[in-house]
Length: 217
Image 1 (cartoon, rainbow, N blue to C red):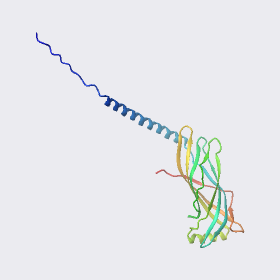
Image 2 (image 1 turned 60 degrees about the vertical axis):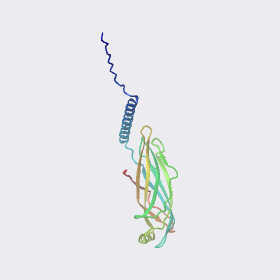
Image 3 (image 1 turned 180 degrees about the horizontal axis):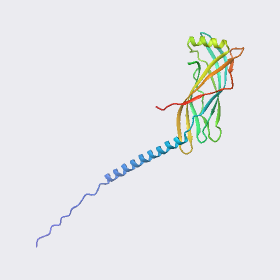
Image 4 (image 1 turned 45 degrees about the vertical axis):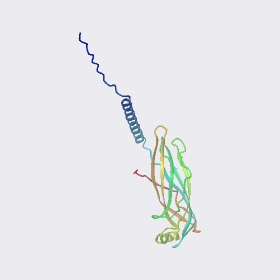
């Protein structure tokens, strides 16, 4: 009687390492997909909210100890600003302020930090804030501009303008925050000097500023 030969075929089971690698890839794919979906939802939410930049208004300008000649320019400014939040649902925080006073196109104020802490304007309350800025004149204007300023000063009215740059952060309780950088221009600020010519004040009741959101790189 011939002996029967038993043939057993065995297929190797998948290794644990390949199964773990597959799970890791799926987890990464799900995480990336979830992140992209959340980012898209937040972007759509902010496009619906459409937060508007805060409004800036120069309400007062005072100049003291002012002196200008062909060789010298000195003085001190006190400028009062009103900053308002036009948004009804979004809080606004303003910081990283750069503040310059110019005569024509020439910067005549010495640089100085003007915000020790951010200004926050809430949508529900405190939608308007006031800020006082004190700056000293900087003796760097070209002689040609100084001569023109001397002529204006003798007529008792000098036209200044204020330029600012600031970062604004929009804050929503659900959709987080969104940042923009602003370019702010307050032009045609006529300062009238009194009989004592080293002191002057802004003519009129104040000027609204033009605010432009800078494009991101």
